[in-house]
Image 1: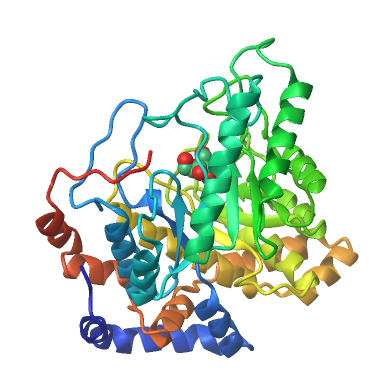
Image 2: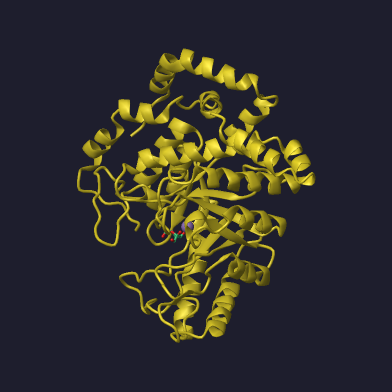
Length: 424
Ligand code: PSV
Ligand code: MN
């Protein structure tokens, strides 16, 4: 389904006067507003192909209807999001959930919606129907070389699909680990994993990056072989300069200081990508910014500080992706909310008075430092984000257009009530 330009423009017209008033108010207090808007327009967040269907829990799955039935329909859904917010201009594929059977056609379809192919994701955390060997006891860490070989070959196949589509990176997330003390030898499983990753790395095209994603626990509950940023950094440092650590917000132990982690990874030139979501307890996969918006802002604050220190381009030096998929909301509405939350935090970090913050830090003026950060966080920047969307041809209020146009109802009509997208 397509929401065409005329409809978006018509709804924008109705909201324009109100928007202008809000925008002018906020713009008056910001010196480099044009520069900020340009940065917002450039900033794109990839949508994972597995977030377009209703996510499952361990106990059940309750699809809301009209879910995409194949990769083409997933691209269509992301095209729709991008038409509304002009900030979702990329798709991240998971193999084998979304094998592009005909890469030329898939590429052409994506181009039609102005979408690029972000990182490719491999999957050695599930057994596939015709798979020879099982990943029950791990993949790249496995005690049996033949299982490791199978996992390596799968990753190399994923790179091949990615090359055909014009992707430039591979994300490896391993669920490998153990559930009970004594189940595995930590050193040997690290070394097996390293050796397997090295084999995959050796097949990486020169202009590609490899992201090693860490996660504290789940599905393994005693140890995870890439369990935290230190372990990931160990692998990526040993692998070489095309290997980077990927941070998924939901993959930390409670209360971890993620903003400090990203600052140090950036300092080391080893932060490669980001998976956005939010959580209360664990890897909850909740809508970005729905639980801890201040933490998200603090993370963005460190990201910008670290990137600016190295003259990195905000929009394209790191791979930005949403990684959330849960079970009670319409997934497309949820993604619109997540993208909005990311843009809000990004712009709040952009308006931090960095010079004054540095001064306060150098004077040990703790109170002023806090005031500076919280002044930015407490600024209502929604009109800036909306203005960027408006100038890029998107909707002032994407969610309102989505509801007014009854998109979900249309999708149900087109695809049926009992569809289920591939994913978790
Ligand atoms: C694992 O929890 C993860 O964050 C990885 O990025 C996977 O690729 C994705 O979620 C989907 O399972
Ligand atoms: Mn992730």
